[in-house]
Image 1 (tube, rainbow, N blue to C red):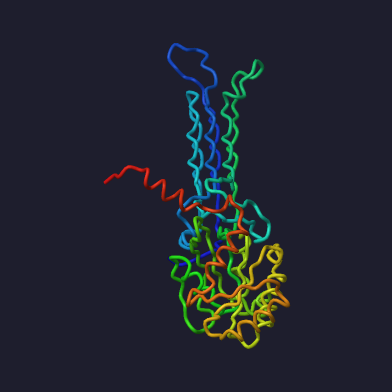
Image 2 (spheres, rainbow, N blue to C red):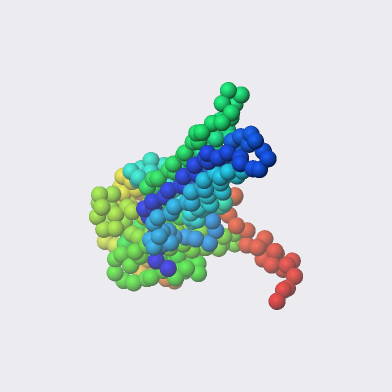
Length: 347
């Protein structure tokens, strides 16, 4: 499935049905009076966060969503039928923005959360509503209220507990493949990762979700490379994992580049808890490891040593990340296993 995290959508709610002008005409009833019914209300357009979706690809093939209008009122005091609503089913973590792409309408960050994007128009009153002691035969009715038409943007920000940061080829995808069942593309050239990937990582008795985004380069905040288009997917993370390539000849410059780009991006990314890791230590001897770690710690604080290929240091890094994640976001593997054991077998 192709990953899509931004979509433009046109929506329109249904208009209300017009009220009816009608008079009762029956044999042997001399003074029937007005009996025009009201028009039905128009359908509304809703957005709902549902489970099982992690992309907005459905909105690539359908961009127009129009709710049905209410039916007109009829004689014999018959009210018109209400128009059906339309529900836009979006992944959890979707932001809904105005046409300018900046004004936030709603942030659907909880499963089952709903928001009304366009309210259906009210139905018009029939002439029965206008009957009074001084106007017993009104010949007027209200038209239905028109629907609301608007253009909105849907922007997906993935829900993850840990976000991976680093230059292209820093080993982010290798780390995700080594610690989870995710299988991102891994190759020896830059920008192998072209769209975000999610993986469920387990350590000891808990699991959490890690998001891998395309690598950043210097000037990403100004649009260079793939730019900072995908940094929004780590805005909701509890912690960041910053991978630094230990085989790079510009270790400190690489580290500084990432910090500058997340500061330029803003949105509080630079204030999140961050774990710095010297990666690819399988290609370094003991003396090089000690020297590079000391050099990096002078500017970055505590540094972990790790190799995504050999698996060295992976568990220590995962445990450090686990300690930075709130308990409410962690999923207990023991509880999940126990639930499976207690559930009776069914064909």
